[in-house]
Length: 188
Image (tube, rainbow, N blue to C red; front, side, top):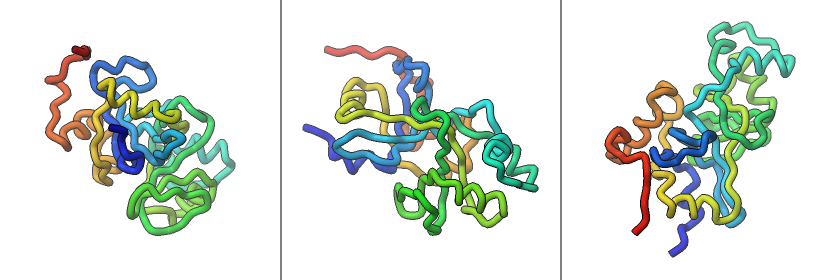
């Protein structure tokens, strides 16, 4: 029975230990959009080599807040690694924003970064470079291959849980202890 595509938007994909793809091993990805054409998500537990200050400098945006400049930028996935994706809360509609759930958005436009630099951006935001993409039916197939757990997304995990703790914490949301799962899968 096929999965209802709408069910996977606003879900976290938690890589099971058997998933050995270097882009996704031990990753947690927030599914931002899922329809008949495929899915798009952002990996939310991997730091890139960049800080937000590097991104602001590259874009020519002045920012005085040292804490903001020092925030890590996530490695959001292997697709469009040169493009920024801002996951944020709030109710403000920025240019190029996609509503993932009530009060949770992904924005790809410069205006949200400019607002953050001025100190009037969203209350909580995470910036990622790149995203993850799945073609039509690919994600559903990976789910049947036991590559991923699906877990409802929540703001606490996305914005407050330390990056290194997100994989186990996400699985723990549905009572799974990743240390007790085999790193291989089989089929009968």
